[in-house]
Image (cartoon, rainbow, N blue to C red; front, top):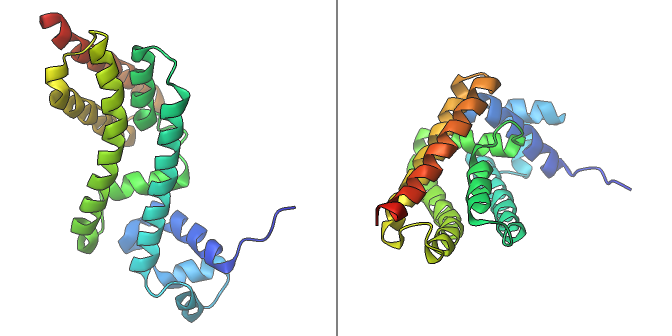
Length: 201
C-alpha cells in the first residue's frame, strides 16, 4: 500500500517542477508553498532557504543519475566494445525520455544561478570525474583490444564530452526528428574519431 508523501517530499516535488520550468530566479518559495497547499511561512520549517532546497535537489538528482550510470556500466559488461561506447553515448544523449530531475540537472548545468555558479561548477566537475572513470574503463578495454590508441586517451575523452554536450544544446533547438538524425551522425563521427587514431598507428 502506497504511503502519502511527507510535506517535505511534496515541497521537493513542487520545487523540482518549478526550478525546471522557471529556473532558480523564476521560482519563489511562496509559489512552491502554494503548490503544496501550505502557507508560505510553513515552508521554512522544512527548508531554511530557497538555496538550501535547490542544492538538496541538485545533490539528490546527481545521486540518482550516478546510480543509473553505475547500473549501466554493470549491465553492459559482456557487450562488444562498440556497443558499450554506444550505450555510454546514449546515456548522455537519449534526451527524449528525461525525467523531471534530469531535465532540472541539465538546465542547471547550462544556466546555473549566478551566485551559485562557482560552487556548482566544482560539484559538477566532481560528478563528471566519476562519470569519466566509467568511460575511461571502457576506452582502456578497447585500447587493450587494439581498437583505440592508449596514448590518445585524453583527446578521445574530450571529443566524447564535446559531442554529448553539443547534443544537449541541439536538443533545445531542433524538433525530435532532426535531433535524432543529428545524434546518429554525431555518434558515427565520434566512433570514427575514436577508432581512427588506432588505424593511424
